[in-house]
Length: 172
Length: 172
DNA sequence: CCGAGAAATTTAACATGTTAATCATCGACT
DNA sequence: AGTCGATGATTAACATGTTAAATTTCTCGG
Image (cartoon, rainbow over all chains, first blue to last red; front, side, top):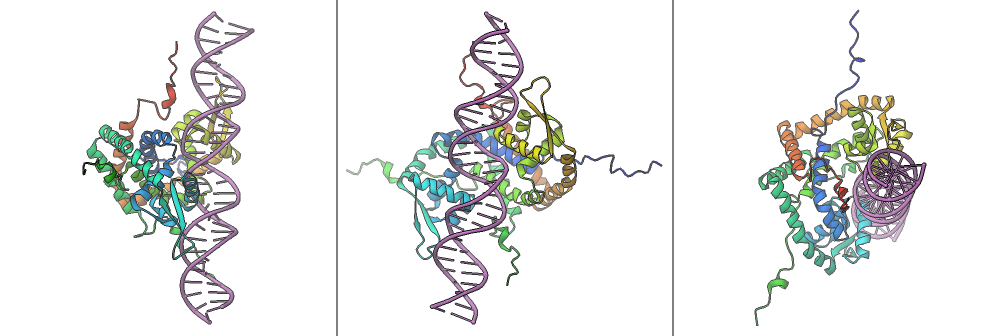
């Protein structure tokens, strides 16, 4: 009579620990890195996300908000608020699209460009500090792996976070 | 008269591109990974952060909220709200500390434990899917690098995000 | 040219991130 | 016992993450 199913004997399935869970490990690493950058952004009176927007506009120039959201890794609603704030503080400008007036084109203002020019050296020195602590070669190794991971997990050639494309509308 | 300083001639310092900026690269990688897990949490009617709390309580049992916040990588204010919600939905229980009545001890309820038991296999299969796409050996390599990065950047042996420890009090 | 559907953006609603401030309790010292 | 500084936790205030819904404009077929 010892043939009971082991179901009730082990009702505690294993979960991966902090060093072996990919979401947790990536969260921890990013936290560790951002601990170095956050105080700097703070000092400049700007948030990390606002910096991401300014950074993209600096690197790539004027673009519509849809593309900007993708490039800055922000969701459209977040970007909408951020653009409004950055426009109010004169860091960016916006104008309606030329051919398509639905879209709004955003670009960096002179004040925004000046800000980038001012803070870029500090960001670079933080990067160097991190590289010095972790090892420049391992930074390269890590960056390569992260890039490969993203490519391996990407659903399609361009489908970013728009998996909701086919939302089952068998309409009509 | 052609001896002007080159300052105005190159007012555009370089910024690292998306694949070479550590904050951006980590953000992208985490986004790619979470795209796999998010729909699952969604389906269970729980948020990612709520899962992190439940996960820690499942792995380590009852603990006070301060420690729980550290283990779940949440800030105390966020955890305060999450615990309130999880208590309302009966996933967790709480009771005042025994020796120190300032702290509140949180633990997983039977309902919470049952939920973990139910979803754990799905999470594991997602992990396996990711490992299959990226390569199990490279996952290991990446996890090791992330762990080493975190250790290399950690300020002290235990000082997590509590750098505000020494707030200038040249005490006694 | 008109109307139905698609697309770009914004707004809404709720949860979390982030820093600062508040509240209650503990601990040590007098 | 009384007080002051430290500590655990929460609340406040504002910005962002996230999904859904609303808005405006475009496009295309009729």
